[in-house]
Image (tube, rainbow over all chains, first blue to last red; front, top):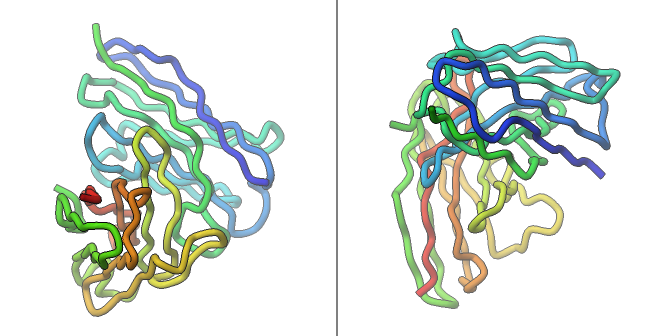
Length: 120
Length: 110
């Protein structure tokens, strides 16, 4: 059974760096073809893909947000970490991590999401 | 502005058939990349509904179906039920090396 769970601070101040952690079980990020992605959703708005990391440490980022994002993995801890620098109130959103199907380009298992508010 | 365009809202009465469109371009759907659909019930995380244009994961009712043609894709729901009231999102891959989502469609069951 694949499960994912996000953790993060609930409130960050503008210009601070946000660190999001995704802890998962039921699969290994060392298995060929597997990936974990991050997707966010501002309140009342659409889903927005942020980043993706693959089993072989290949990393992909949203072209529009690339400079402020860093994704890493710790295979031994079954964790994926996403950092976003220079946070702004427009970054207020629910942040989801999701399993990226082996050999497929879709997200088949999602975490419950974590709401992050950016405010001074 | 989302890369994939969906109607903001659709509605239907119980038992009716509704469709939701997802329009892309030659850099994503038109290139041949698959389209996937997600259902997001109020206050919950998205759930994979259709993958690979027309395939249903285990547990998804056969009332849900997907198709793709050219630069567009569609999600069809037949025998509409009250529990289908949710937001629906399409997703594909873009030649800019990124995953892309549609702007979402709110389905209201009247």
